[in-house]
Image (cartoon, rainbow, N blue to C red; front, top):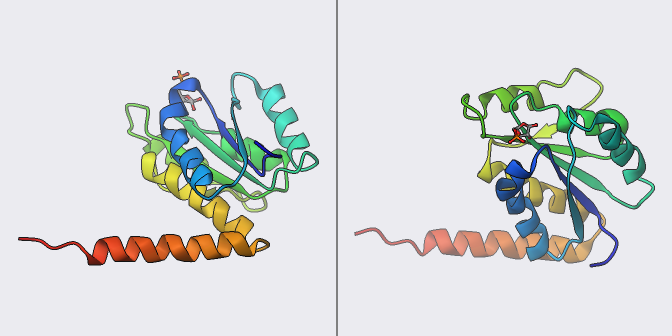
Length: 161
Ligand code: RP5
């Protein structure tokens, strides 16, 4: 694959099934990405190094998915001026409410664009990354319009008994 434009990061291998939803969207739109396990708690230095170097490596958007006391997206945002999208993962006994609050409640000055909990959130993180990139890429603009058209058509075709 060519130079990645999006970094998909997750706090644990246990988040991978959900975060593959973001990768699937990027694949569908032909956006090159890289996917890695990083952790704000378990490997904080490596996580900081990744976020610090992402911009100069040509990454344009970061997606951070984590569960429980989910500090990954916030840590990425702390070390980078790239737009950061946070995905709260529903892997805990609190069903992701813990991760939602930890991800969304960033103090003023360091934004994290937080999407919904779990599978839908990972999908929307991929789509939001495509939408951000599309502002300087007319091919992605055309693909997004086609995506919405196909979605409309599918819903309009539903006939209930
Ligand atoms: C977070 O803790 C990870 O993002 C994961 O969702 C959660 C549990 O991690 P594991 O104990 O499954 O590795 O850091």
